[in-house]
Length: 458
Figure (spheres, rainbow, N blue to C red):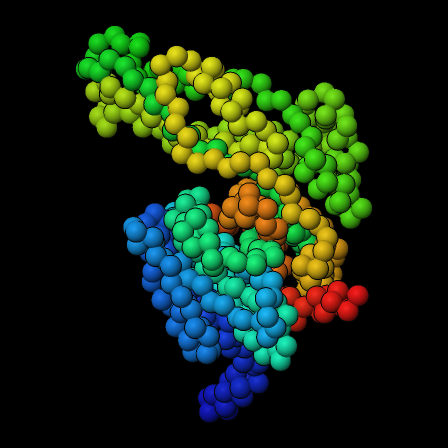
């Protein structure tokens, strides 16, 4: 039998021999603090997050400026000037607000907790993690003795609700902020990572267009015990049923074709789809190559997301409402699509547009900014232009003819991407720190502007 004192000494020695857990990086600590600020939209509460970030910038010797809407929504900007006159500007854009946490979390969603080697919290990926990585890039670029581009780091309000009180507000009311902007770099990248290996880095250059609608039906109110087939709720349900039953014509847009053909050399699934694009275009329906998640790139989607009528089970309401989130393909005629929807809904139902976006050209998958992004992201896997079914603030700039690119500098397995807008959103610390390093390379390359110097010598 080993004496207790000997056992105790052995235990201490074994614990001492174990490798100590690495302390989180500086940037991971910043992100943890950022995640602890609840910026759920609505209402947003972006002012508190902007104050935190302004403090971080101040500690690093960089000034910032707040932009406030009449309703008190706050966005924050920090500018890193170039060392040459009249330099072009690249915007590093992310949003302060997040969607509601919802139920089903394993940890408190706004605790900024580190567990199992990951940093957990709503916004870890969408998009506070990106914002902190961009901030690290801004600081890295500040160390350069010569900067031929100016960098504008921008943290905006309200992206999750369409950007009306954020990016759209800034573009309309503070256009001087965007003078000489060459390109915008924000969220929306679509990387393909499987078992730790990144098969491709997707830079978003095109996306579908939002069309958010409110539908109202009115009818005879009264007590629910009576017969009332023409009630507001019944009229609304019947109209929505007709709309849902309408056929979905499939179309191959130039954006979808570019995406699948660019990805085909590196992805077997994309290669199969690329080989059947002409068949889809000719038949107007899906083929066997279409995998789950791809359909939205070929059809105008239509989702009923909110329904409301009476607050009591035995009362027939005079009014019933539905909210519809439609996403249109880049070249869909919005007026014609709306006219067809109104016809299917039938007479007596009112349709109001809450949010829409005009068509815009995709951002070019070439040029100096594209090359800087590609050089900073690559290393394992090719860089390809992608088309996404979601929406980001990039659309506000593309509508004005400004190139906008969506990136993710993080190598994340698919299950982590599925936690975005769901429970247990988190980012592994190793993936986050590697992404920060990529953003540093990108920001330094953009600010240094070697390509601009080379062009000036020609």
